[in-house]
Amino acid sequence: MTLKELLHTLSASQAEVEAAEERVEAGRSVGCTTVESAPPRRRAKVSGVLRSVTFRPRQGVPALEAELYDGSGSLALVWLGRREIAGIIPGRRLTAEGMVCLVDGRRAIFNPRYELRPRPGE
Image 1 (cartoon, rainbow, N blue to C red):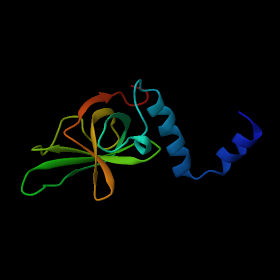
Image 2: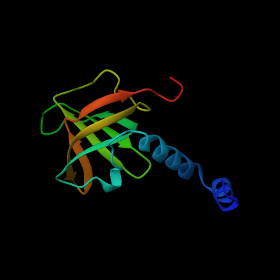
Image 3: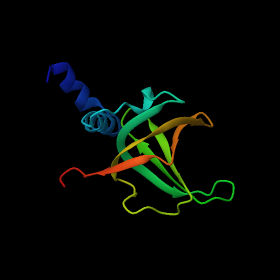
């Protein structure tokens, strides 16, 4: 690590440090793209950590929504017809794949194919 990198790390905010760590962790997933570069109306595979999980009905249909964060940005993972899914909890790491949509200017994947990943240290 160079002196410049060391100084930047020491002066970085906690959020910047966490984002950098998450980008490194997400980069270890083979075949994944970053959230910020996932193009709308195309299939993408992304990896990250779930920041939040919310039950949010959509037009009368049950929907479980989770925010996936990979250090470059976040997107919504939405499972229609579901109230809960075992293992889908805040802090959980996963890889998700599906069609990226824009909903109110925000990236989302509906009914993604997903794989739970071990937490650091597991």
